[in-house]
Length: 134
Image (cartoon, rainbow, N blue to C red; front, side, top):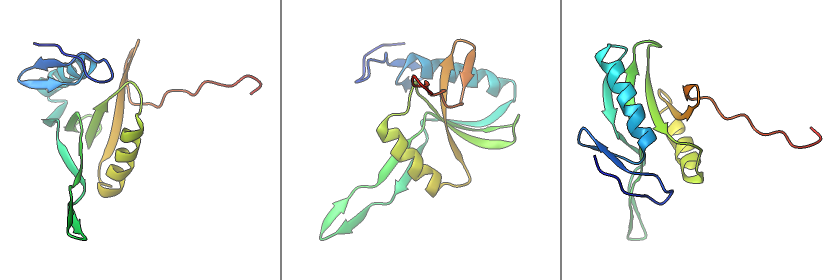
């Protein structure tokens, strides 16, 4: 296992031959590995890549495709559907845009953001802080 630091000051972690962007992502991988062994999930993919917009040429200029690499994708036998997961503490502007494109291009899947809280993992949106006077 090795550690290095990325632009958001996450410690990169290598585990089972995969390079994870953060320790939290590696921790979630270990949870999924356990669920795989217990047959609660199947068909686990690590860092699956999705093409959100195809490459194209305009005015003799080549535009590269827009891609999105999720952290994980798998079939969840407990809820009987395919899940695409990204482990993040918060939604970045780039993630929000790519999530919108993903939801449009792949309506059969839901892109979920997983966060670790004190009580465990959740895909629920954080509660917005109330402003004074509300």
